[in-house]
Length: 341
Image 1 (cartoon, rainbow, N blue to C red):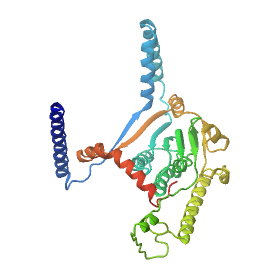
Image 2 (image 1 turned 90 degrees about the horizontal axis):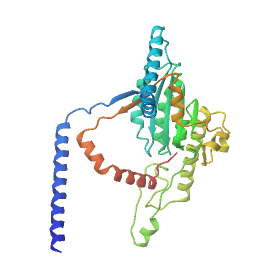
Image 3 (image 1 turned 180 degrees about the vertical axis):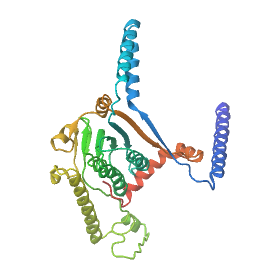
């Protein structure tokens, strides 16, 4: 027991010391960043052709013996020398973007800068490939993300959207902007619908003689609430708002994919890639890896990623509370009147 007591004391001291150090670091970082402008992010560009070439060469080194590898490299060298004497042909370019969507579509901040950068150089002869993964989220957030993708279409640059896992609800809203949608056979697609839900504890409050008052200016400033007494008129207005949002969603999808029987697929249901192909929600069944590896044989493929520069204070804060924030945000958003694609 004495050992456990001593160990508990030691542990408490250690934890206290670590917390104190973190507080000092955060305070120091806050003082340094005070009055400074937030550091800009940086666009990172990598050539995927080199990545695929590196994979192949590593495999060749393992599978081929010394003589075979030497002969292969000699042959490749001769081919490169021969091609270098020819007039170089301008290869088409493929710009690859990634969007990993959360409930707030937080990746939009990077996406907007990536699109701005590529549109400064891209032409209708090039292609943009978006590797998309999202189960949807807030209406206004995914509305902005979709508007960013629409900039590519408006510029006349071909846009291909690849879905390996899921593009549902707001995720499919983004996907439908692509001139071509490619899906893995078992990816999840669809969910063209709108949902909002919240609990009501008004009866519980009344049971304990607790009053809750909601004061508004404007007949429909508040329709349904968590704590107040909901009315049938408020429910009808709330449902009306959902129906309007759903109709806007359907109109948006129909604009970019007029071939869809929109009333048949806008039921809130989801389909796997194979079934989604039959319903024309997608155009082709293929993984993004296969599609890009094929493109790399005839085009220059560049991966773009805009990385935000975070201060020490931000990095420490994110490491400490990132997971908790995501859980609380999801919980609270589902309780409030946020609409979700």
